Image (cartoon, rainbow, N blue to C red; front, top):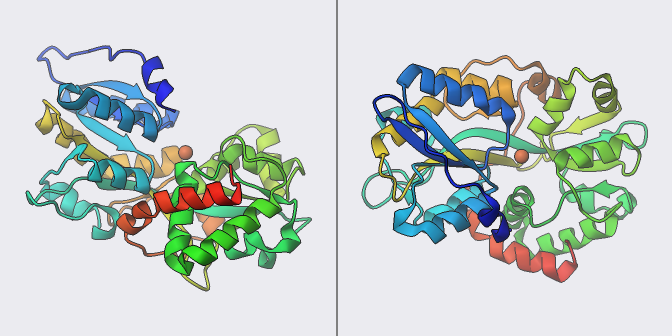
Length: 343
Ligand code: FE
């Protein structure tokens, strides 16, 4: 993964007439975000230079650059990575009344020693289960635990165990049922695999639609994207699928966070903070909901996304766990994955 860092192009510096710009390192791999960046530049005159990589690539790059890093804003798409970057000191804790009022306590980092907050969640996504309605009943797969049931042998599609989305889910499971039971559960998932883990969440959904597997795990926005697709083949694909928000009768569905922070060595704090505050605004939060099918993190945002409503029924129970606990389990989880042979 570290190799990706060196393949990234150098940052092309664009500046507005008065020289205002920010450099963003972003793991948000969603083309719909372009409109957000354009809107920010239009309303503030602050130009944006962006480097896109995955979470791990960004962290490696920031560490390699150290104090010379040109990064001003960091956008990551996983709570465990946000936590890791925070403990590695890559973020500058910031004081912002706007952000503190908008983003609830449980979706942001704890206050640092300097009184600032190291990072803020900006949107959330649920990790749900999709299944072939002709092959399985909803009650077969209405909890994460059931994915390890031997009756699903050879029927499960899931992306790599060590992808951040799964590391966070498995880290959360470790909090809910303890490490011993989690390792047994992970072994059960491996036993139930229809194929070796490969591809992203959309590939797992397609695996169910094509009959290669009967059940898969995905973040909600990938599914919503297919539901709202204008491509008839993709629409037909999702018609075959049932969606479950797991663990509604116990601790609730696993939620993950995408969030942002000001980079520790930013030379541009004021503009960087302006950008984060913009992302918490009603218009940007609506864009996360309608453009990328994520749930807004800010309080009191009204949004209308038919796919999110259709799949969740409007409301669902989500787990309540401290992000730091999930983050801290990462190493433990990776060791379990190695022991049970979950690639
Ligand atoms: Fe993603």
